[in-house]
Length: 308
Image (cartoon, rainbow, N blue to C red):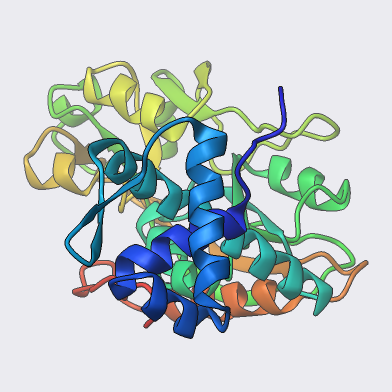
């Protein structure tokens, strides 16, 4: 790739000429001589081989080619300024990236709200979001591949900040044999039926969590797949209410009338990498996650405007 012939400073100079109405005005804004500004623009046109301005009376007006190039240059100059700002923030200890690993059962809407609020405060800091199931979250954190982790499991050696509970409910298709019994169900009723469970993504010591007494078990890779299976009559499962709210409301899924254990409510925790101090961007994201975790999922939400 050959080096560009025109510098960012030259593009900034052309922008100033157009935005402020002429060479003299641009020179005043840029704290340069008018002859220096004129020479810079003339040199640009020579280097590009394309006329950028034409003189109409006493005013410099963009040519068609100049208009196209100037429009594209604005984004280029903006990105360069953002890059310089990011370097400055990093020099002050501001992170370039925050790595967040989350159990897939945690409500995505809460994360969306927290990240939406984080964006205008991020100063260019990126967020790398990774979803795991059960012990998969713990492994990612222990491997040092995450700065923050949200899990319903207790992670040994870590002190987590308590987040909200997530309600799971035992459900099946309305025409499932368990619903046809038309009575309160006991554990023995479930043992002969197909249970759909979510695969633990951990590799070291994958865990089985919840009631697993069914003789037949299908293991799937995601909660969404489990909900699809159960919604089509393939077994029963404990699924998070926030994921299947529409299906429950429309009668596509129906809670099992269990004598006990029809629901369970694991409490999630927010963990941080204990081997390094939290940077300023990570601290902001932590507080936003806590704030939006405590808000009801059906509460109205307005995304903040950039720079607000």
